[in-house]
Image 1 (tube, rainbow, N blue to C red):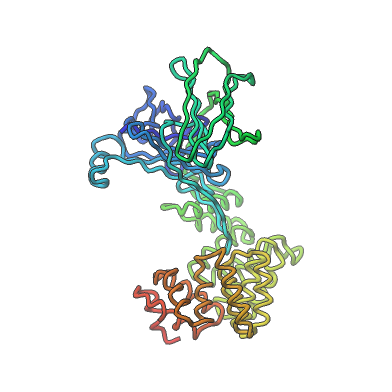
Image 2 (image 1 turned 180 degrees about the vertical axis):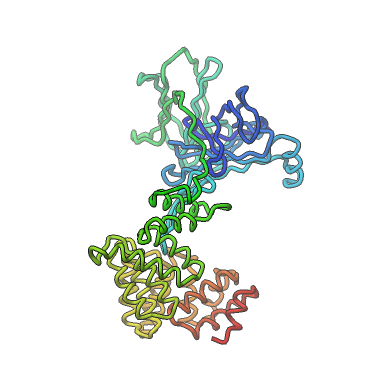
Length: 505
C-alpha cells in the first residue's frame, strides 16, 4: 500500500509514547522501535516500517497533518490551530508478517490501514494537560478528505496547496475545500514574480500546473481573493541540520532527591501521566519529610488522600499547608489549601467548618468559581434557596461553563417560585450545552413531562456512570428525595446505580 503520512517539512523529529524514544523524520538514521534504520529509511512511508510503530511529531509550526494513498489518489487532512492541537501521530501494525496478519484479521477485504491521530492540548501520548475543577477547554478540529494533489505543503479549511521541486520541474497545485471564486494564485522566487493565474474551483476540485524549475531561488506560493485578501500561502522550507531532541529519562527515586521543588514537579508529572510504576505520593511524602509545612507538596499529597477518601490525612496536609501560608498573613494568593480543607470537612459532615473555609478560598482567584459553587451547594442543602441562587450566580459569573452550577441555578429558580425563568434558563443554556446531564435532569424535575423524560433518557443513554453522576450531584445539593426518582426514571441496570437505589437513604 503506497501510503504516506506527513505534515509540514519542519517536522524533523518524532517521539514514541511518553517520549521514551526519538527518531529523525522522515528519514530515520538510527534505531527506532528496535529496528535498525542506520542506512537512512523514509519512515513516513508505510511499506518501510516493518514492525508496529507509533510516531508523534516533536513540533510543527503548521496547522495541518495528512495521509495520502497514491494508488487511490486520495487522502485525509486534519486542520487545526497547532497552538491548541499540536499532537500529530501515526500508528500502523507495520509491513512485516505480524502486521499483515493483523491487517487480515481486522480489515476484512480492505487490506492494511494506518491510524492518523491528533492531540489537543497535548503533543504526545500520554502528555496530558491539567483540567481544573469545573474548567472547560474548547477546541476545533477539522478532518477533511482530499484528492489528486498527493502530499501538500499547507492547508486550511478553505484549500490545500502543493509546491514541489522534482526532476527539474516545479509542481503547483490547489485543492478546493470551500468554494474558491476568482482566486489569484501567485508564485514568486526570492520575492520576484514567476507565475500568476486566476481560478474558480468548486469544493472537491483541484488544479495543477507544471513549470520548468530553472534553478530559481526560494519559492513562495500565495493564494488570494480577487480583492487581494490572503487565503493561504507557503514559503519553501529550507532544511536545516538540527540536533535530535533528547528522549525522556526516568526521574530519580524519592530518597535520592533533597529538593522539595523538584520532588513536587516529579510528582505532578507522575500524576499527569498516570504513571504505571511510580507513585506521585511517594515524592510528595519525601518533600513533606524534608519540610513538614511545604505548601505545594502538602496540598498535592492531601489531594491524593482526598481522592482516596483518606479524610484524616487530607485534613492533616491541608492544615499543614495553611500553617505555612498563614504564618505572615491570612490572605495568601493561592486558595487551594483552604479549598481542600473545606472539601474534607464537608465530607466529614462538618458543613459549618466547610462553609468558613470555602468562603476563605473564594478570596483567591484560582479557586473563586469552585468556592462559590460549593457555597451555593451548601446553601441549597440547608434549604436557603435565595442564598443558593445568589451564590451560584456569583460562581457562574466567574465560570459560566460549569454544568453542575447551571443545573443548580435552574432548580433554585424553580424552588423559589420562578418556574418560567428556570425553564427559560435551561433552554437557553441547552443551546450552548446540549449534552448537559444536569440541565436535562433539572428540566425533567421541573416539567415532569414525557418530552423532558425522553430527552433525559436519550442524552444519558441510561448509562450507569451518567446515572451515578446525577445521583451524586443531587445529593451534594441536598435533593435527597429526587435521587431515587431520577434513578428510577433512568432505570440503569448497572451495579452502582442499582446500589444507589437499594440504599435506605
